Image 1 (tube, rainbow, N blue to C red):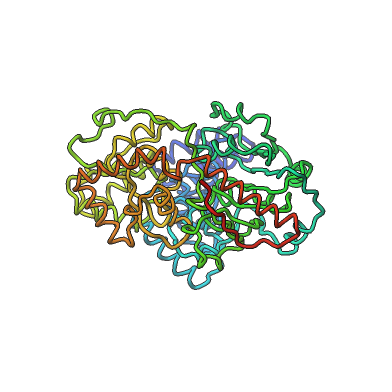
Image 2 (image 1 turned 120 degrees about the horizontal axis):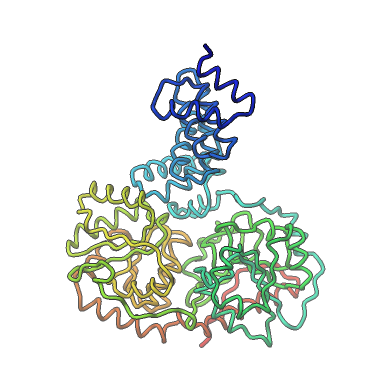
Length: 565
């Protein structure tokens, strides 16, 4: 009589993949002792009928059997778990792949990316410590596999930040930059500025900052074009932005890179402003195709656009002091007040819901974090736990959608000696509801070394004090920049100990908190941070000076913009 394994092989050879599955799956699911070859046949058959996650799971199981080609099967499992978008299973498979093959670039990148979102503090600490040692040793593999947006969430060393390689495109060459700058170009009377982004929707955080500036640009002096490669799912979230700016939006996302570059050149753009840098799905190859004589990095990515051909970066003297210049290939264009734009008109400000509606205790001081969880580094965790330990009447209210991340974080909290019921989780919500609920909190907690950026501005807009500390690179200095522009220097600690002290002092001083909130409420209409008109004039002056140098054929240099009233 033919064995099960032999019968499965015959069915597979005849293309009867469902027959293979009907034969082997019940045995595999019961835990019967199938050999590796049978599990591989089952995996192959599942894949052939489109059951990708099942295929990955059987490959992963077969890899653990004696005599199986472990590395090959683990790599297959990892690839298919990713294809099935099974993040946690792919993460585990990536970890297993790296045990067998530490040089597997795909697994290394996947592991390093997802480890920042799981809030497993012990694993994150181990991974970051290992990565830091390798980066300091100049390890080429580690440099190549770090992802920049994740990297700045845990590494505040500017020199190391500058080492990490571009992942979403090819690094520009000096020769390509020279060709771009020397290409013949006609400068007209109006300054033609092209903003390049895939975020053109009022559903995206960047537009919460920039929308009012786009409305206020002086049309007598500037001709503005919004070059768009926004994905359809984000376009669908838009309410009014694309209707309001429809005559300025030029869609290029469907074009090959060189055709898109030609579209930009055909419009005679003098200054191309890249709003993406190293953020999600940035079109780096398009910027590096050199569509404009002057190219400027702005707003989206808080650091040097390593490998991206921009001449200037819009910044301020807090986020980019002169001592940072060696770690940037771009020249600094220092704005007064803060580098960050803010919309003072198209931004929600609903009243706060009651604490009972939000599931918050009435008698506690509520500390809130609304930052992306990838910014909750081990350093941030330790500082937050120190605050909770010293201020026992506080609770930490944090936005975290992922149940696994919540479980991991709660376990770390218990290990740190804090009662888990003092952590109150919230899901993401729509923007107006989010601003409203921020108004029910008492203190905004910042993250380190990558601060809240739009999140910090949102908290200040909602009238909430945000406590931060001085940083060591662009992304870790943003909240300081914003607080200075709100005239709130007393909320900036010198270091981690000072940060904990300041949070505890505020948590225990209701009168001081009330006074701070009143100042922030008033600052919404008086402080430079939320004066979109003043900001736009400063930004336009920056574009004018950049344009003037280019028109004269002068090389880019650091530029400082004097404040306007």
